[in-house]
Structure formats: C-alpha cells, structure tokens
Amino acid sequence: MSFTRRSNTLFHNYSMSGSVISRKFVHRDLGVIMDSKLNFKFQLQKMLSSTKKTSGLVYWISKKFLKRSTKMVLFSALVRSKLEYCSEVWNGICDTDKSKIEQIQNNFLRRVSYYECGRSSSYNVSLEMYHLTNLSVRRTYKDIVFLFKLINNIIDCMYLVSKVYVNVPRLNSRHIRHFRIPQAENFNLVPINRLMYICNSLPSLDFKMQGNTWVCMGGFQLSRFY
Image (cartoon, rainbow, N blue to C red):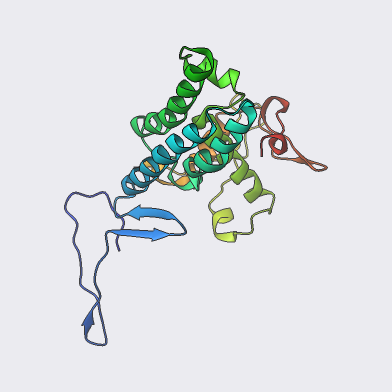
C-alpha cells in the first residue's frame, strides 16, 4: 500500500518467493480505515452511517425518559464516542466533513428538544440546554490532550516525540510560539504538525503539570474535561 495524493502514480510490483504481492488501496488498522490518499473518506462514510442509525435508535429508546441527563449519557456513550474515536489521526478533514459530523449531534438534540418543548431549538441553544460541547471543540481539546501527554511522557512514543520541535524564541520576541512547525505541502495530513499548529494558536497554553492537575489555556483544567 502506497500513500500519495499524486494523480499520476508509478506503482511497482513486488514479489515474494515468486508470488506477486497484491496491492491494497484501503486498509483498516485498529478501527481506523485508511486509504491511499489519506483523506479518510471511507472512515468518515462508515462512521457517519453507523452513528446515524445508532442516534435514531437512542432517540426512540430514550425519548420518554424523564431525566435529560440519562438521554445525554446514552448519546455520549453510544454515538459521540464513535464520532470521536481516534480523531487525533483523522481530524485534518475539510470543513464540509466536519459539518456532517456536527450534524449528527445537531439532529439528535433537535429531535429531543422538539419532543420535550414542542419546538426545535437552535444548535447553540440546545448545546447549552443539554450541557454538551461542540464536537469540533472537543476534537481540538483531544488534540491538545494528546500532545500534552506526549510531551509529559504519559504516552511513551519516542518516534512521535522526535517529531515535536520546541521553539526557542528570541529574548524580546512578541510572537509566542510553543513549537516550530516544519513546512509540508499537505499540512493537515500530518497529525503531529496539526497538533503543534493548534497549540501555537493558543499562546496562553501551559504544558506543565501541577500535582494531579493538567493546566491548559485560560486556567482550564484538562483533567476536568477528560
């Protein structure tokens, strides 16, 4: 299997013991479907198809429940967990695909609010009403948490650590950047570069550990989020 986004790709046949090794263009590894162009098209299709069915099932099972929290726990456990699985790998998707993912949660909340209140609320109002967070924001936090764990040796992977370039700013520099990001043609396809870019956009981010608390931007505690 070769990974490239070139329109004209040269393929070479490889053989072992006289037998030609078949070439694959799609491969599933640890639940993530990767294709040769690394746009995760098949992963998103499978994820959206599965969560649409599960979301509808959760709604019909829980719509007569009296407690809102019970409905949200079911949704978070059975639907949202699938929408966020290994998002650190595939989160460099386009805005159109991000909207499709967000629509799963939006549709569920709209149906629940219509059943409870007799009218559908806007997405932002529903998020506040049911104490949920935008999925795109949650994926961003997951990216930050992953990089935090990597730097603090909570995740033991020396290869990924070697790809993290800490930026040493000048003495009187006005631009605070935590990391130096190598240039890449397809920037979002390199997960570790995307993670460093997100952290650079948050100058108040702190990667230090204070006891058992993980400190993040604006005093936000990562341990409270996960």
